[in-house]
Image (cartoon, rainbow, N blue to C red; front, top):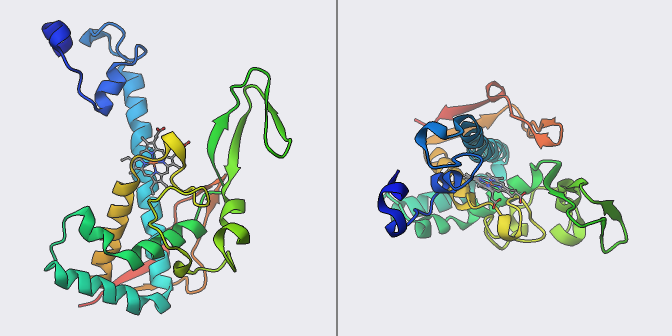
Length: 245
Ligand code: HEM
């Protein structure tokens, strides 16, 4: 290992791998034969689940909503075609992707209406208990989660008819952290992968809009399967995408 070889001259890289190696539970003595590879693999597995599972699941929901909501097609396809023309079908930067404002707001509304029931679990670490502003108390050690549905369907926070799909209710990007929109959490532990996840969803929908005709069996409802308090996987065979050409 380089640290052993270079001693004090060694500058640790700032990356996830180094973060794991700094953990004494994983690599207690910098000895390659004494690395807890099982724990290492478990954590990487959790990372994969937390990044790819969430992104592909949400992107599927956005695709379902797009297939269903024909009233948005004209505007969204027009935006996609204009951007495609402007960048010669070769956009590359976040700045280019940021130009897809209508698609961004459409995705934001999709995620607001297709959210987990509970999320952002937190444990009480106060010595005896914690008292919320409304007087409700939880004891030390208790884990609580936020009720996303209450937040997402609150008329005061989301505007009129909060249960209806209305992409125009949003005036900021889906990646913007906001107390009224907690898809990616809030504060210092907010999701660091959110730009990646949204870029991936935007590029996917952009290409599909330009090249395919979408149709779905679910004209009136997106098949939302709550497994426990998470939204579960949707069944791909119940929808279909037709090639435009
Ligand atoms: C649509 C997709 C995604 C959603 C909905 C999502 C949601 C979240 C949420 C709500 C949190 C905060 C958890 C908390 O405060 O308890 C979080 C944290 C995190 N996310 Fe994501 N995420 C997504 C995609 C990704 C991707 C693509 C990556 C990595 C490439 C990623 C990596 C992480 C990491 C490492 C944390 C922990 C941050 C910390 O504790 O400081 N996520 N995510």
